[in-house]
Image (cartoon, rainbow, N blue to C red):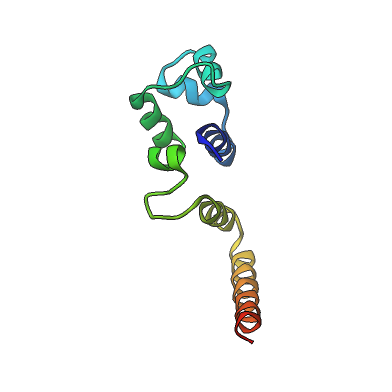
Length: 109
């Protein structure tokens, strides 16, 4: 996954639009659309502003590694978990623990 895909996913995860992001960082929508179609690139300041707006890090957008050292799949898993209701979170944790226990037994037997 590249910067552009991570940026698109971050915009989608925040339930926002290109228009909103462009307006918040003070660039014309046409400029933002050029970035999204890879015709031009944001400068460093704009990239940092975008990451703050989307509640992620510039490092994650560029490399796919979060500040906490999580990879993209781990970040997606946490993001999905945060959207669950408390009972859904409890069920998800129980299911994951059960799955991990079965997998561990399978790996070591």
